[in-house]
Length: 351
Image (cartoon, rainbow, N blue to C red; front, side):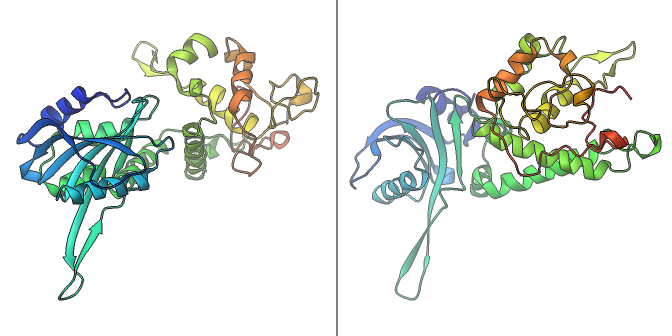
């Protein structure tokens, strides 16, 4: 199933039946009366049952405009209780626009509070849920809902939706990538000393990861243009002859030009997030613009690598449309160009 598309009931049920749930899942379409008053929920439809998991699947249509996850989950728990069910998968779909929807696992557990009282425990609505649909990054739901195949038991079902599981896997993959990367990447330091280029690799790699994760969160908040991460757009509009997967030479060695890192990411880090937006008619040297000549040599807040760009001004305009100025230190360029020290390597110099 393609999780970056609008909700479609037929495709959703087909995914559950053919790819995700055990083979005893039985599809159906049955309107469920709302026995309890609700704030957001307008209709509920039972889409199927799975006896081996003691599971019911619902589609809940709602009027919430701000993804009120906790409030919607409370209403779904009441629906579950009214239906005398304990475990469900729920597709929460906005009534007026199915472009984005939430796919959640909810569960009510029972235990003894004391000798005479039974205690109910409700699954955490913040943990067991995926936001899906148009414009949503879908790598994680695709990995856990598509690629892992059919659910095999109760524990597997919970794990597919568990944020704790996702977090552990994320840091495990990040750790593996880091261990691989530090053997390959090189950061210049003292350009007069060729032997120290890998001396600070660990520190520089951690700094790069920290900056990049911060940028990704900004992107998810629509504060970084999506175009900066769109390979086709970059090739057609921003960087000349951009083809990051092309291999150079007769034996297919990959290019080490690092054009994307230098032209897009370094300029984003040091000359956009670390620099105020250019004001019309201003001549301040910290404006967002490409450096111009020797007079701008040691100004680490100005853009570089203009030669890579098809349309340098388009790049500046895209940044100024959304990218904020963050004066927090994370995106300070650490290069001391006058003394030949390049911890970040933000330079047009070939050496």
